[in-house]
Image (cartoon, rainbow, N blue to C red):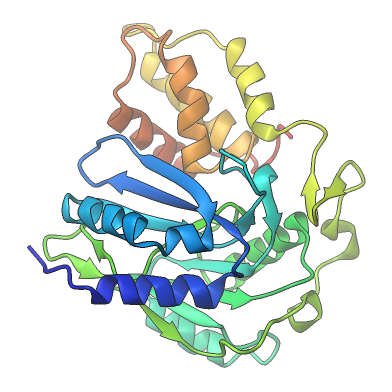
Length: 304
């Protein structure tokens, strides 16, 4: 078992205070590596850096919980972590889930993409690349993140503005030998604008059916609520009646059609799951969600 020195807190606090503004509200998420329940808290940066919260994170990390932090700021007082709760875009984000060193080399040769602000090394060969930004709306940030992921072989499913990164200083327990998450600080002093990145088609930046609230595109109804309404009409999965296929197709509608992230999808599917016969375990449901995102053919956002 690795040791957990005070350096963990120092590294985490430095990252939080460097990457976010003092008044920002952020989400902290603890995810059990042993299929236990997740724990989420949302509060100010100063609260996240406090001794009591850091001790909670350290204690949870020693019991094989992964520690995540949001890369953008949420509305003050919010209790949920969806793209519609994001109040300010602080980062453009790229999830590199393989060959991170090669992707970073390719990125360094791109004259049209500015140097990253920092790179969070989350596990062997994997990294989260972040650029500090201002002036982005939620929709334009997501469109740019999808474009970067497509161009640089990043994870196309990890492009929500509600995305999280692993918090540096803590351990990733997914491997037989735990991996300590660390951050490579690069061009931290620069704060970039949309003009610093490859241009998107103007028609893609802000669809006409969105209005701007707090700098973020917001639909008339939250996609999570639309997904709930949809699931209320979906029959439950029943063993012996193609329940496995029915659950896969339902998960595809939720994670791809309604473009929910894994946490959002788990919340709304858990409500539908209680009607299934028998209900899926949380671990099974998480696997269904991952499988739908990876193997489904439903167009992303096709039901929005």
